[in-house]
Length: 271
Image (cartoon, rainbow, N blue to C red; front, side):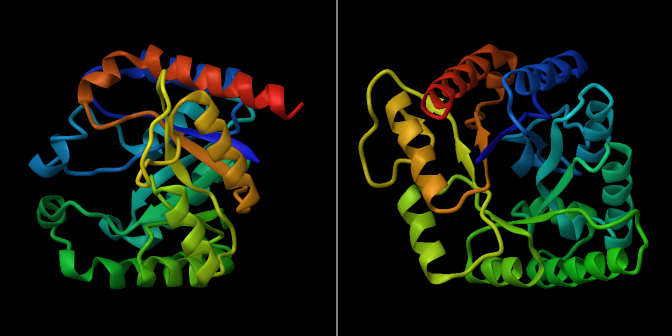
């Protein structure tokens, strides 16, 4: 099982130097994958949790591709209805080729109604558009256009998202779900692959409760979460150390320490 990190590409503490240090840290710890998020128009509903500066994911990952070597790079998740699918096919394929085949395209339908309105994209049609655009991506890459096919991870956990995963995806990419919820979904829905994004917040004492997100709690709890995810068939687990407060982006050292702790404990258990 491989590990990735969702790196904040937004917020008051994020700048090119911090992004470069994130990449050095993730790669230096032996993680396999670095992923970033996506917003185009940082409208008030977006800015509350993900404020400016918000660095474009394709530009950011293209830049980081030149500062890393074997680290895979991806989006968690690109809001697919925001962009023409032929443009996405071209950008994703180009980034994959320029990085030596290291790109993973995680996609989702989006949630920010004001952002959809600012972009002139009908919010109520986002699911249908996502399906249509995924089909266009596959057809474009199969035809040899756009730079070649890349792995596609499908975000979301609705029935529609799971149907979308089975039809178009290389992996199901749920975001911050409790373990029991992921287990029940996997028992009912066959998926081509499983690559969850989980929270990462280490606490001194165990965290109790059935709704505890995977990745939150004592180091013993988090390591047990990882064991269970491995048993559920996870090929990659992506850690998300951001918890909604933009001021966290000024203090990345806390996340780096948590990642270091998890990497050391997991390595000790799986030599």
